[in-house]
Image (tube, rainbow, N blue to C red; front, side, top):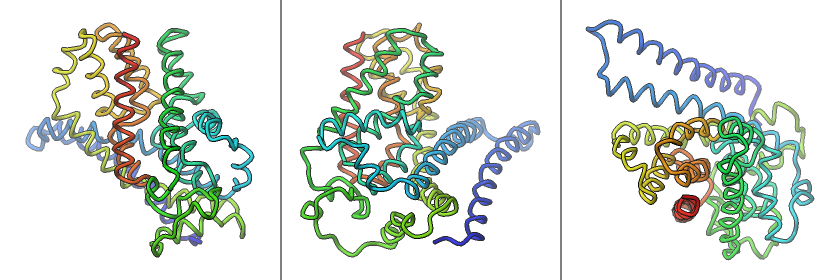
Amino acid sequence: MMSRPRLIVILTILLLLILGTIALDNLILGINLIPELSLPDTMQTFVTIFLGVFIEAAAFLLIGSLASGFVAVYVSNEDIARLIPRNPILATCVGALIGMIFPVCECGVVPLVRRLYQKGLPISAGIAFLLGAPVLNPVVIASTYAAFGNSTVLWARLGFTFVIAVGVGLVFLSQPDPAKILLRPNLFPRLFAPNQIPIQEKATANDEIDHKHSHVHESSGGLQQALTIATDEFFDMGRYMIFGTLLSTSMQLFVPQSTLLSIGTNPVLSVVAMLILAYVLSVCSTVDAFLALNFVNTFTTGSVIAFLVFGPMVDIKSTMMFLGVYQRRVVVYLVALLALSGLVVGLLMT
């Protein structure tokens, strides 16, 4: 277990990182007031976009990590067993709706679903939760209603998100071997029968740490243990988020978005353009409805709905974070299935 001084040091470093990013942004603005020290426009834009995405994503990743820590300490395997139906189809449907209990966005949901796997959540239900929770939660429903009102866009977003989350989750029912889906043995759902868990090679140091965390509630438990686990989760998933944010920022800066926006009136190309924008911009699902509202008059309704359905399920930064939970080929399958689903949704609603 992490000692209290070490926990305080790590939390202090986290606070300094957040304050440092804000200070850096202000420093750049100050430097630009001095012509001799002014940064190139491209560099200034890069830093501004990166900090905007990073600070927003880090806040929600922290929320998800805290939820993960509290789940590890206070939620038992038996609790998950009581919550999730034994029927695999019903279990997947329930998984898509767990976001109503754990209102997290696409950044926060990744560490939480990883912890829920260790608590016994079936793989198909976990994937449905991963894809559905960023939209099917009270915060995002409220923000979408505030932007679009009681409209077709609102109900289409909720309905298609549920259908796609459940459908993609059910696809993975055809693969009963968790070793071919999940990245590490310590993530295997504990509700699997013993003969369904293959013999694995020696666990890594991280696996051993996670294994200890999965049993922490059996020893002393408490707030400190939950915060310790949350801190480990935040830094473990944060490296993927940082890399994804850098990639997202580069795409936003160097891919000419004006070219994408110029094709907004074409019924097919507009959907493709909005799917690309959703993947590249990596906007948090809690605020993306207000961004989508700006495209209503220039893009088709179907393409706006596709943006609101596809973006929260997967973008550049969440793709990088998926690699911390699933095998690489599974991540490729997920992105491809979701892109195809988003395209179908956009064309149906155009």
